[in-house]
Length: 114
Length: 113
Image 1 (cartoon, chains in turn red, orange):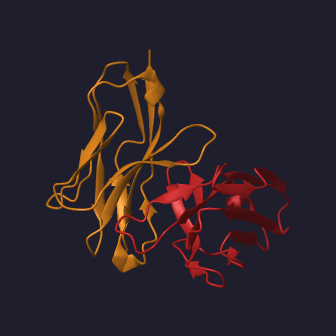
Image 2 (tube, rainbow over the protein chains, first blue to last red):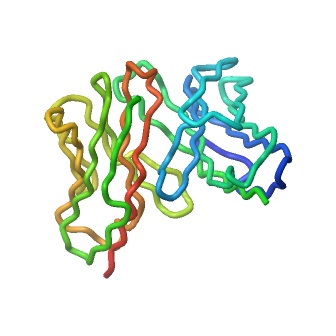
């Protein structure tokens, strides 16, 4: 039983369209994160959340919004998708207040913007 | 801001070779350091962590020692196997930065039988 799931796993979108990537976790963690993965850049932090109703900007938030309606769910929203947002997106959850703040990742969503 | 530098983008080895992947970090506080491993089609998963200077983390024959003096956390394995082929990420988490972890660019390890 996977603790962090993402949907869809693959998505093709058109330039200018709206895209929503969804993430669900059953770890009961307070913190959740969205990263994108690109060759040469590794994993870059887009947005994160400390709990339901909270969203914070990461290192590359431009062009992205986030929504945390509940403890379990965290969405990444591309209001006007561009080809530069073609990437693999990973969601993760973690528990703050611990010394190490280990993260648990989902399987990723491959997004292609044409 | 906090950052992690991995100097090797790709490493190609044969089975039983010795592995070193270099990781250096920059942080304003006293971070926890991690190594994550990612297999094809999966998300990254924790290999091990270290939280204090001179602490050694280890798992599955891999190890790294937290060195605050040289701000390094190099990954080593004495004898790699084909099954070790994966992407390896060095990461840090700093309480002073709200615990949002930052990752390096990753190192793709390929091991030939």
